[in-house]
Length: 267
Image (cartoon, rainbow, N blue to C red):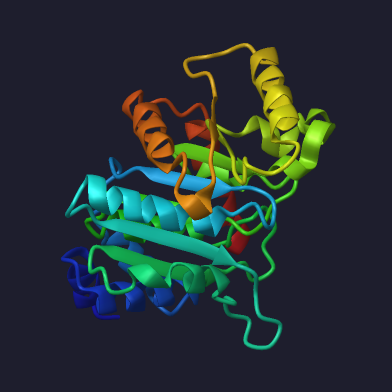
């Protein structure tokens, strides 16, 4: 397999990058050799955006892309959107890409959808390797959006340096029943659609939940947002940068364990 595609992808050729991701996703012959030839920049931050279906994850990322483009002109941003799998083509349904279509003309933003292909946990089985490809392609930020997840689908913590959990007020006081699993993975909570009824009660319960856990090096932050109006988005980006600056990822060991497990499983 032609090693030139790796060199072109790393130099910023978007067509080569798209081709390389497809080769990895489809496990084309020789793709392991291509991955071995990557010069992966481990300092490129990966920000995971997760949460239940309908919480507004795609809309929030869309607003973040606009905010970052205005605040840091020239920054190169990649978005890896994990979409449900089509039952007919077994590819991604591309719903998230449609919500971010205003950024397609921006040469500094690259958006790619991949299908779960039956994988549980909110991610694709190839998400780890594709993220490595993106980290080798001269981006400044990489966002990974999971499909809508439940309490036990927490694989994003093994991939992201910072994990943002997007929630909505409709859960009300039921937040107390969500202490396990997905509620424990967040570095940052975003209460989206915070203008809806029940937001105050939800916020109160969320603060109580956060403070019941003994803080380690980082106490999870809670941000109110209305993604459709871009409210709270600037604060979210500043909080993401604050968390990244601390270089604190309590799940780093989990990341490498998960990666080894996936490689063994695939073999």
